[in-house]
Amino acid sequence: MKKVERINTIMRYINNRSHFTITEIMQEFNISRSTAIRDIREIEALGMPLVAEVGRDGGYSVMHNSILPAVRFTDNEVKALFIAFMATRNAQLPYLKSRQSLAEKLLGLISKNQQDDLLLLDEILLFEGTNPHNPDLLELSDLPHPILEKLIQHLLIDSYLWITLEEGDGINSYPVFLLHLYRERSLWWMEVLDLQEEKKRMFSVDQLTQVELYSPKKRMSRKKILELLGKQEEAYNLILELGPRAIAQYKKYHPLKAFISYTNPYQTTAMLKMVVQVNEPEELAETIHWLLFLGEDLKFRKVPKEVLEGLHKRGKEMEKLNF
Image (tube, rainbow, N blue to C red):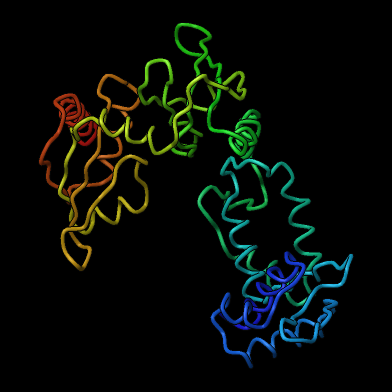
């Protein structure tokens, strides 16, 4: 851990305690006694009001009503924050309703030279989802579904939820335990355990019309729920051998449930396994498109006939286009 980072971490550690000793600092941060004493003196010099207590059990305490001094970022840390912020444009992230305000506050924390560096980075770096002709343009798609933030706020309290959503047959409600919330194919998805049918299901956040906390009569721990789902896990119906070019494509994009395991120490060959819901037309079409995206550097070891038929159909369509 670098010195600046260590001192900032020690300051946060100290500020959350009414009393601490040199020995505690040494053990917590794995540093020598002389380093701990030097760091405490430097923290005092930064303005944190510490009171030394003499005696056998003496140590230090923070003066009453003290506040933690402002965190200071290094040049590289500021650049890392700014670049990460830039890279999330048009990513439909929650809590980012006012990027302009956040950017102005970040720039206001740093020096003029640092501001010039960030503005230069903003001009020369382009990320996926950025309009190269107008990099500052934020499309309407940058806004997430309005219920996403409410969903996350509930999840911070409890994973047991009562959700109401639009489906093909109308409006339906379910008691669920939410397992994962993730973004894929430009949409936010919920992976849940349907508590009525006790099976895993997937819903798009865009389908949600209402979400509330739910208090079931019988609660299960997450561990028990995962054990229940593990017993129901379907056998993989798509297994592929990937070569280096297919692995490179996989790293660019892959569905969340498609995972690979490398078969040599150089990570140039791998096995890919996943379950394709062939009865879901949208998922079947997405899988076929993705397999074409992976390219020809792969071998099929197991594949559903529906996927194979779809690939053959796309191949014939491509042949007609290249007559």
